[in-house]
Each structure stands twice: as structure tokens, then as C-alpha cells.
Amino acid sequence: MPDKTEDDVTIVPIPGEDNEAERQRIRKSNDRDQEMERHGERSKHNRGYDQAADGIAPEPEIERVVDEP
Image (cartoon, rainbow, N blue to C red; front, side, top):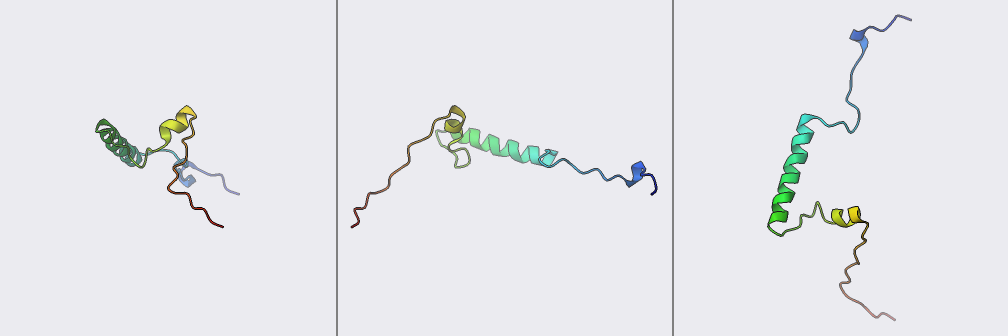
């Protein structure tokens, strides 16, 4: 079996490792969410993150109660 040389090695990124395009996408999303928060709006993307970080489980919203036989 021949020895492997550096030319035979393929370098692949580690799964989950960020690249510059991914960093920019995340930064843009964060900037958009922060701008919404400055205007008193909550983004769908961030809903529940603060409660999860604080360990607070929000009470479920009850739309209606139906009495069925």
C-alpha cells in the first residue's frame, strides 16, 4: 500500500464550522431582530429564547374551551 502524501489529502470543513458567508447571514438576521426589538416588536425567530435562557416556561395560550359530551 503506497504512503499517502499531502496531495492525496482532502480537507473538508468540520460540520457546523462557520464560514464567512454563514457569519454574514447570521449577523444580518441578528441585526434585523435587534432593530425589531428597538421598535417594540418581537421577531418570530426569537420568540421564546429569553424565557428558555431564564428557565421560564410560558403559560399556554387558550383560544377557546369547548364542552363536548
